[in-house]
Length: 265
Image 1 (spheres, rainbow, N blue to C red):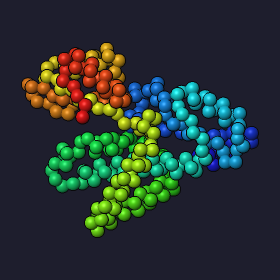
Image 2 (cartoon, one colour; image 1 turned 135 degrees about the horizontal axis):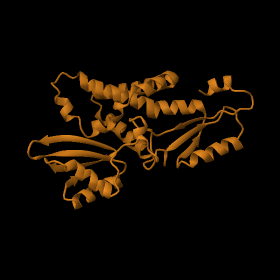
Image 3 (cartoon, rainbow, N blue to C red; image 1 turned 120 degrees about the horizontal axis):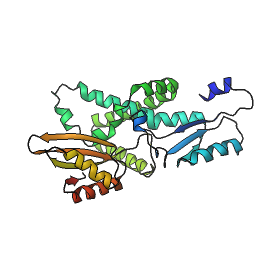
Image 4 (cartoon, rainbow, N blue to C red; image 1 turned 45 degrees about the vertical axis):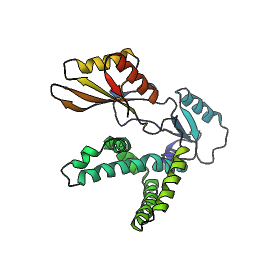
């Protein structure tokens, strides 16, 4: 995009690429979020060789910061490589994991076990392809490099398991834990995870309305909802996704006060 802009814009016009590292697998105005950029990393890519500071870039940074985002400036090439590693590669991995599950010939048994961690790490597999097609076309080179590096690391894990080198596998776990500890926990990523609350309700008319009404009165915003199971004439369990752990704790308290059995895993 940066090179294309440089080729068509007249002299004196400054183009700076921008990428808010936040979003949703949902699309359309019905899923609009006024706080989408709040505490999210927003990358701005000044043209290569652009002297700093530049009042025009400073003005753009100030405008973006008004949305509540945290601005990082970097080159377009560095951004493309980083986005491939932390956003585009995970999207492809999620798709591959879910499709691998679909290929298993076990009469759907594995799908019944695919809860918890599997659902969390593959939520983005539900993302619409329309957006991703353009991303894969525009950032093909860095994505292929990220896939190559991942394939090499994954092959090393396979080799260690094949050779029974379990201590070496343990080293990989330790390395991963150390690296993950350096990832900011209080800022949004490209797709932020939801915090889950589970609530049991009797099988009776208006039960869901009472759940959502109690949470609305308690100031808790539901981002996702799913009926996990229902026992005819007895009751069922809903999974509610909310933005943060604090929201989840408040939801449990609000629902308990309203007479529901609510809990977190």
